[in-house]
Image (cartoon, rainbow, N blue to C red):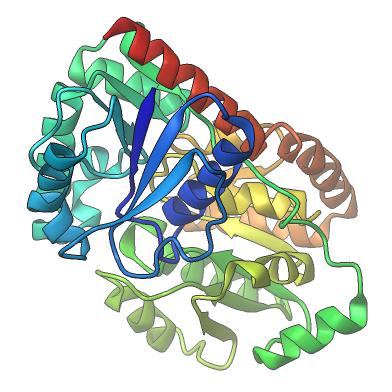
Length: 370
């Protein structure tokens, strides 16, 4: 079988890019039976990929996400057809006869207000058309599988779960001097509470800042709040909240950091907080668990499925509940020990090899049914 792997996210800095990159690396290591074409949508997006001989890179011309989605993939597939196209974020506007689509998130349907109107419309339009025309839909979690089946009326034979994972590139940094020097280079000193993710409305950062302010004011914590991530759409409220609560000297904004920095950031934190309003999977809390750092996480969407019993859960719309969960992670040694032990066990359930095996099995099941 010849499989085309189409990702508009490769080469970006977000979670979907990490998933695509690691999935392709493990598919290359494990699948020697099928042939693959990986489409390079933006220049340099596949530069870090070292792939086996049964994989080839096709550079798209014209390059760019929306030219490729709009017409580039259709022209490419006419010239060089594949047996099965896998679109991992959004499908091309004109879809081939045989393709599968990965549903990475559900917030564009369940919380549409967290997107600007044009982005929301574009995502909903492409995903609605994609799911209805796809031979199958791949989902990161059982939560997403249930949403897709209920919303689109699909049977279980057309919806597959392919869970992201973790690899050896995420783990605890035990060298204290190395850790201190790295954190100091980012302006981080002393104990801190950590958030990693896009600075956007869906991630619920303003309420995290309000919960942190309550802890500073009422519990007298000395921790700083470290926000790691790039500023995206609908982020003004984050900076307005920092200014309103006069927390400029207590909050560290690092911007987006390379993936190789994350282990140190998790390892240095006293607690990682994941206040998201909606998530299709959510790598950061799992990565934090793998680094031996306690997690406080929102009790919504797929998050409980991913973190298991190894997080202090809270209602992301309730600032007091969030603050209480964070405080338990900081102040109770018993809670911390339990979260660390259970977190390491939970993180061990997820691997990129498992994801690659699930993808291969799903490709072959779909191909056999077509």
